[in-house]
Structure formats: structure tokens, C-alpha cells
Length: 249
Length: 251
Image (tube, rainbow over all chains, first blue to last red; front, top):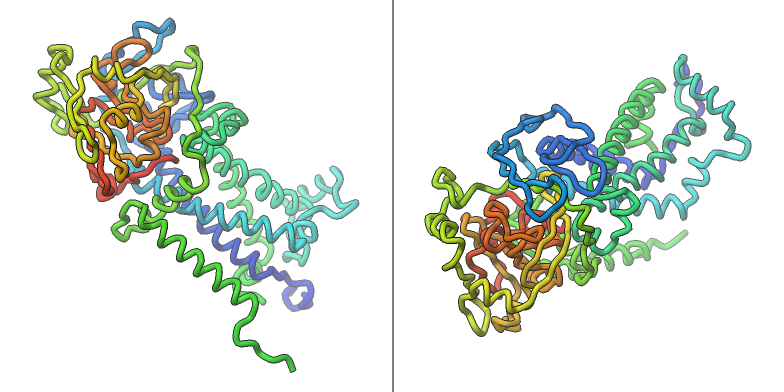
């Protein structure tokens, strides 16, 4: 079939540094996903704004642990000197909390992601990788062609070619230059020591809890990308694609 | 034919960088908390050293407006005034609470020239700072409150902290304890709060005195403070590290 028809020059070739970065970032991302989920389980409520907790209204709550809607609180005591309805109340419920390893695992994996990501960005810029392989060529980008490319993805797909398609390029660029920066910066925006130095992080993401919510949605989009990416890898010559990104020369 | 070099330039640069990194790391690691061989604690130390090395330790955390103050949950290990609370109960605390902390005094000892006890009146004479700040809990929630108290730096100065002192530990009546390094201890927003939202701290929010370490997550801010110990050596009074938690929590 097509494998025999494909000449050597048409098969995919990835540079060594691209393969290494792809491997480290994939591995780190999967660990971040699992540990992030465990961290979210201990407080599965998301908010919008500066601060939010069990005694304030949530944007939404996820039924992902026994902490969901637990309602185990002692009688609320209002703060005397405040004009609003702010209260304090003690928790009576033993919550699920595995953040001891959850948080440290998350941050350890984040170190691998951030350092590898930075090296990848620098080499990508200076080697011309982004310009050559990912930036749409002149005349390549038009709404018509993009729609045609999207429609094409629902039909029968051919074996992956040596060049990325338009939709593929736009997706990769969004992941590299938008989703990963957003997920990393919103992560920083939750750190008290980092925001003390860079308070603009709290401002551009509308507050600590908004940053946490954006962090969650960015992670969901990255997971969605991962799933679609794997499906596309499967549909366009799984063995060859896998070989190309790992040991292929 | 090209001669094969014994040491290529690339290899020389790589080796150089690696050894320089290793030297720097071994120097730094002496200042980092012990890891007991746990890879997670090695990661915690990396975060600690990176934040100490890359960030300014004098930068102030964001302070908010009165209108930003929110409700504030109490999620500590238990009520020290309640005999039913197995982890936290203290008979001494229960008695102090009944008399409105009339006989309470804070002990400060260790690497200080003048160890001793301070009543609330004496502490208040050392200075006062009010700040509306965000409390970020490791669980994921946060709350904003106004805290008023004595800057820890003022107390350390009054007690004559020794030049060799490196860490400050805080012991609560609830048997909870934490330590911080001198950089966080001397941070201008690190205070021993005796008022919250303009009133005497409600009992469960840490009365009569609670620590506020604004540059770290919530669990470093020890409540119901009974005793402060200044040390030259690293101590992890509640054994965070052995219990599987990070000692440093600037993130």
C-alpha cells in the first residue's frame, strides 16, 4: 500500500532535539494532569475573581471526590466590624486531601515542563524550526483553505506527509504559543511568592481564583488536544508516526 | 581526513556547564532542608532555592481594599479548646480562653540575647502593622482578610536575635508547629496578628495571636501561638517533611 509507494524523502523526519523535547514534555504533562486532578479533588470548586472558598459562592463544583458539596460546617459567625455578610465557620468534615504528594509531584513535573519548554522555544526560534515547519507559508493561510482542511479531517485520511497541514500548523502553534504559556503563567499566578514579585500576573488573569479557573480550562483544552492528537496519529499511519517521533532516523 | 579530537568544543562546553552546575548545586544544597532521599522533597528544595535565588525577598504581596474582604473558613487540625478534639486539645488553652487570655504570654527563646515572655500589651508596644491580604490554602481555596499585629521583625529585634540565627519556629497550643527561614521571618508583612477584620481575633481563627506569613501558602501561618524558638540549625518542628509535605510553600 502507501508505505511502499512513499519515497524516503516524503517520510517524516524529526530532529533529535524535537523528539527529546516531545518526549519530556509529554511525560511531564501526563504527570501534571494526574497530580493536577488529585489537587483539584481536594477542593473541586472553581470561582471567578480574587478569592473564593466554601463560604463564598462558586462558579461551579465538580463531583470528583467526597469533598463535593460536603456541607460539613459549624455555625457561621459573622465578623462584627464588616458591613457585608462575611462570616467565619469551622469545618467539621474530614476532607479528601492528598496534596502532600500531589502538590510536590505537580511542581516537580512543572520544572521539567518549564525548563524543557524554554529550551524548545529558544532552539525552535534560532534553528528556524518554527518559521520553516510551523508558520503557514505565504498564500497557505485563508479561511477557505482552513475550512477545506477541517472538512478533510472527517473523511478518509492519507498517510502523514512530510509537511504539516494548515489546521495542524495552527493547532500546534496555538498549543505552543498560547495554551502552554497560559497554563504556566496561571500556575505562577497562584504562587504567593511569585505574585509578590510579579503582581501583574494577578491583574491579567483577574485575580488568584480566576487564574485557578483559567488554569483548569487551559489544562482541559490541552487534554483535548492530546486526545485529538493521538487519534490523528492513529489515523495517519500509527506505526510510522510513532517510529518517526521516537527512534526513526 | 579530519582528525578526531579528544575533547570536542561541544563536549567541553557541556562538561563545563555540568560541573559548574553541580558545584553551585552542592553549595546551595547545604542551605536547603533535608530531603531524606525523596525525589519529591528534592523538587521542593529546587523550588525553594529557585525562588530564593530568582525572586526578591523584599517584594510585598498584594494588599487589597476593605471591599475585597471575604468570608474565611477555619480548616485547621482541630479546636484546641475542645476536649473532643483529639489532635488539637490543650487543657491550658481551654483555661486561657475562659479568662480571655488574661494570663497568656508569648515565649521567645533559642538564638536570642534576651529570651523571655511577652504579654499582649508588651507585644503591642513593639509596633503595629495592618494589612488586607489573601490567604491561599494548599487545598485550593483562598480568602481575604485584614490582619493587624506586631511585625515579627520588631519582636526579633527586641529579643536580640543573634547574628548566627537562621530559622524561626512557631509552636501553637493546638500542637501544630511550623518553621520559616530568616528571609521570610524578616519580611515586612510577616506579622503576629492579634486582630482580624478590626476585631479581636475570633477564637477559631487563631486567638490570641496567630502568625501571618503572606509569602507562603496558608499552612505556614501557625494559629494559637504559644512559643517561638529561634535556631541556627534547620528544624522542621511538626515534621512536615517526614509526613510527606513540603516545608517551603512559596508556591
